[in-house]
Length: 158
Image 1: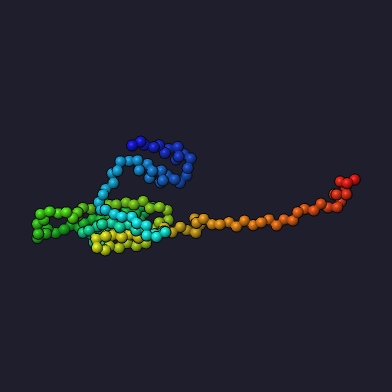
Image 2: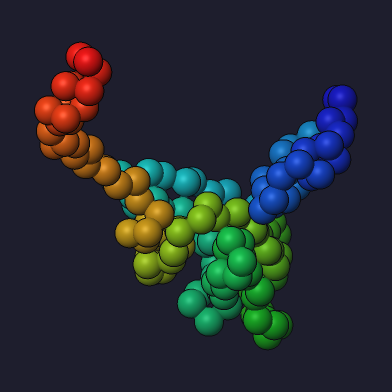
């Protein structure tokens, strides 16, 4: 894959460095992990939901943190005592994970819940009033046409 050099754009723009870093990382080979699987849904005009399959984890073994436009979900299994049963095959993963999601501006976490092995994280995009587009009314200028004074007209006629 070809690498794109964004350095000319860095010189002529202010505040877009996060966007260029994200675009630059898209060109990298896919090194992302696939565990645990997840869905990202749009549940409304300004609401979203991330659902992660975290079977075998409980609330105390999961942590969710939001910092600087990044949502981080971590899962760490507590040390398990030696089981009385011996596993012949272990297909349920017990490994620790850390999954990061880049959040857009003005996206906040509303709630998180764990039900039937699925972690649901509800997000809301709330744009502040100052950032919303606003309509500017155009008023018609009510200026009266200027009248020529009689003295100017008479002086011009002479």
